[in-house]
Length: 102
Image 1 (tube, rainbow, N blue to C red):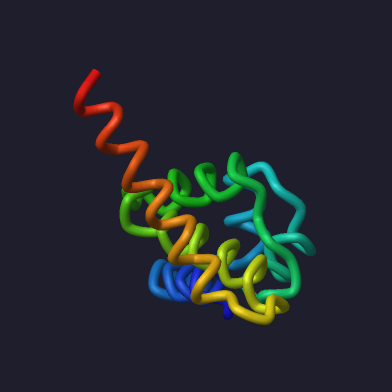
Image 2 (spheres, one colour; image 1 turned 30 degrees about the horizontal axis):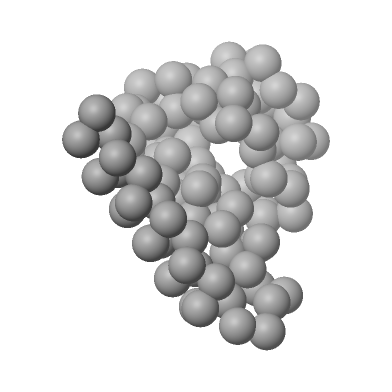
């Protein structure tokens, strides 16, 4: 799964930018950007935010793809990933309710 990398590559091509230009503007290595686009490496949180800023797109448009890739990578090797995700979902929903009640 490489939704974030594919989206970044699409934005770069749409804006007719070279990888080295985006890498410079995002303050990351060109080789690293290339690997992110191909799904060989995952961007760190700060890098992902800087890339969004470089393309002038809201984090809310691209960061969910970045996070989905992270979740997929963590769950893909598990025997029952959907059950584990369900447990995590319940926990996250419970935290949301606790914040509302506070």
